[in-house]
Image (cartoon, rainbow, N blue to C red; front, side, top):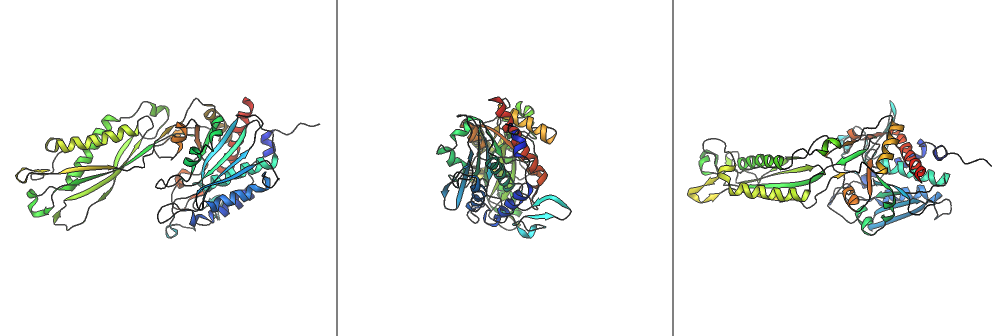
Length: 445
């Protein structure tokens, strides 16, 4: 009796026709998948149902195959999907997680093609165009095809292969809907029995580090007055600009480039910068009495977000206490204190609650080793990288004891961008990377 063909040969490559057919259905739903509440609340169940429909023919529910398919919802119309291909050895698992079924908004008037339908470039059939092709519906379709092929071929594997398609990744204003609740309810506990690959990055290389995010609002309160009598005003704009400059100086002294950033190949160290300006309004001949500068901090994972928040408040307290000596003025009559009126300018800082922590993947783990070897084999080279862009939820998974590694097969240059697209050839390589990872882990047992 002939022995069965090797696992990877039996599964084969990514079949373009069913992949594109499923992706077309998913992109066709994107108008209702945009995540920007309260105006735009996604209905991920639309995608979840397409995934379930694609996998049901090889599922235990229909008797057509071994896949165990389960939809889990914590809000109406907003489902997650957990799919398991059972292995033969208890306590062995490899998982692909993070393929989210919501997208960032798209304005059709700003695109060169319809963002809400899958289209093809006439000159390059490799390009698959539409909102979500790179982030992250292309990955949803990719991993769904991986699970479908496992269900069709039915290879004997020691590891269970588990895929988790999630809701509510693109916005953190609403919680308790996606992977956070799946973890809380213990539905992903078995994923701790092996590496967890978060499939939501880009450019086919391991992303080994991400940044934390802290958003802040610094309000300066001075004294509104006629611009022709500047000596009687406290210019809130000047106060705020100087305060932000001082706050940045203190931040960079306390949180300089960290020695581990070179090891993880971070593109930048931690940064603090203003990104938005607002004030109540007024005439050009009025010195404004108040204004607010808002911005963010991108923090490499080697620093604590809690310590940064504490420091920010200390910075502002220190500046308020020492206005006369801490901040430079601008011109001969610029001032932040009016002694004759017993009036001082002041600063108030507000930190948004949705603080996000960065992550540094474990470079010694079996999951990282397998991902690197698979990438080098299939892509031709391996160049792990880190950015202070953020990925929600994965630090929390790591803190819960999961061996989190991250990768993705879309294009970073089209991430959240107008005219988003991915390449089928990149997705096909991703499919082979997944098979290589599974094969390597199987050889360990």
